[in-house]
Image 1 (spheres, rainbow, N blue to C red):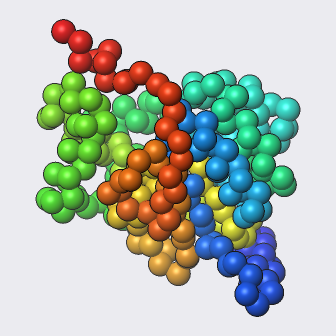
Image 2 (image 1 turned 60 degrees about the vertical axis):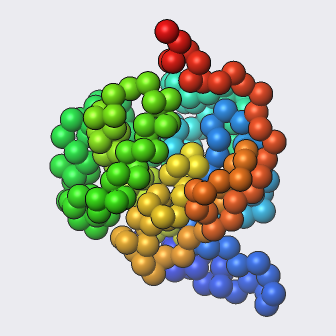
Length: 253
């Protein structure tokens, strides 16, 4: 059934009028998590894209299924996820239309296991498809350790960052797999709501989709507060959120 659904949706998608903007099959919408402007921009993108399904980094599969089955339960499912205030994410859900809600967050116990044991065993038999059975090239591993060290305010021991990189790889692959499954089940386009670190094209979700399913087209938009070296197909500047420096609490003597 899923293959037939995707084929029919793909035929309709390809039948758009000449000159119409053709979206990629999977569109990754990166965000700064606590920035309301990012979520307004994501909502606007969803209204334009009209996806068949939306994959959320923030919701587990069970939470996503609950929200999808009964839209009145979205706020409750969100509260159970432990993420930021639902109010700043509400515009995204208001813009879903008929799109299915897919949760792709890894349970906390899975994250702990990956940190200690690596991503391949827990990911399962598809680990090789997403490159999780192989170590990263030395230069990429070193670069990613530096990214994680900076993201944790340089307040944690550097030798802990290898486990953080493993967790990030596992999450990237989990989100990519969920997006591909949604594409196969519901047809294009599929949108992914995720942090900018997962949306980057060099080693995030787009790169893993390209490895696992090179025939699938992707487009990654990063809603960023400043000019960034982080690569996206389309970076878009948004006003910065008002916030205290999150590192202050971790770096006080």
